[in-house]
Image (tube, rainbow, N blue to C red; front, side):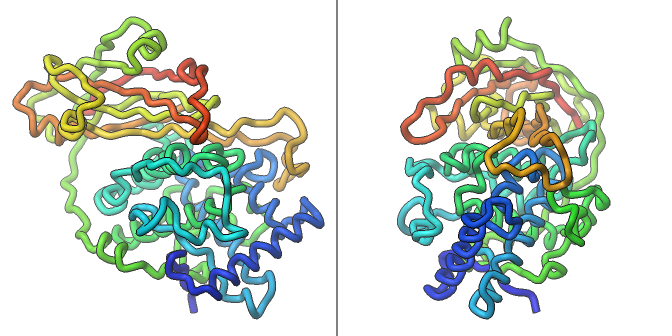
Amino acid sequence: MAKPRQDINALSDSQLSDYIHALDILRARSADNPDDPKGLDFQVALHNDGFVGPCEHGNDKFMPWHRAHLHYFEKLLQGADPPRTENVTVPYWDWIHTQAVGKFPPAFDTQGLSSASRSQADTPLPPNTLAIVTRVTDQKQFAGYPEDDPTGDYGDLEFGPHNDMHSEYIKGKMGNPATAAEDPIYFSFHCFIDLMWDEWQRRNGSPAVTTPDADLRGFLDHPKHKNADFQNTLDLDYEYDLNDQLDAAFAVEVPDVEPDELLVVQPLQRAFADLRSELRETERLQFRLAAPPPERTRMLLRIQALAVPMAGNYTIRGYLHPDDEPFDRDDEGFAEKYSVGYVAMWRAHAQPNGAHGHGHRGHNGDEHPVAHHPTTATIRFNATPVLAASDVAPADHVLTLLYIPASPDDDTPPPAELVEEVDLEDVVMEVYG
């Protein structure tokens, strides 16, 4: 019978104690031998470390890789000290709903789950997480594109809410992919990502993963190590026990999407001379739309090859507004009326040039670490709702991209050199009909 993964706020005192007890046993193993694959340090390194893993980002292995990581980690917890730990599962943190008190669930202040590095600033949660889970029906758009797919890379859930939570809401160790799993909140955070994937699969008929035979690095010595092996949670001996808020949130119907086809791709005209000079001076970039074909039914604005940063994290917020209406970043009404989306750019995983923190040689026999992220991202904003509500012709609109650098913690300003890493190839209109 599948074991339930529960909301961390719903755990009894004994269940929370058993979870922390299992974690402490894994910690003790690492204290005795940092290279013990059954120890916590090694499990953390599977995500963080360029030799041992690292995790997958920016492709269709993102969801299966993290599901595999949680699965094997959970099995170690269950085997840590049976019978006490045999029913331990990773609790999820429902981070689309605010806490009754405080920023994080109170369990994360418990010894064994706490971290002083987390931001305590009053930061809003990503606004579109539920909409992505319940309204996006295209698998690649939701969960990520196969590697080398010319049409995209990151899925909507990753480059929006996932990255925003890492870089803007939690910060600290979670703000850097090279240290993210050192914060125990990582496991419950990604457990909720996995829950949302499970819900999306249920709502959309559980389509087969797009590259079923793709190997998941870091797990090649396990019987299950391919994308297809992590298609179904029940096959992995767990299921999610949804809280009442999630039951209600997921009760909406799956949208009936009419098929359409790409009619034309049209470039937008840059309204600036030099990208970085413009960002340093105004913190924004503006592009003028062209006139689309009249038979259009849908229009997306595609940012081609937006550079993934190394020095830190930043967010790009997009606004589509008439060119005679000045951009006003401080006007909430303006933002509500003209916003077309955002993307949180989580920094790439810096690769070491030699031996690294944990001293591992390489879980897959590799002598050199593997790239952690793609170097660029393909971003799409949906212009259709804003244009449908406007009485101004599309060609008389401007796309404004607002650059918002992120601070690494509550006390440190954003790195000044971050703006030098912002780059993009082009911005175009994808017109469908």
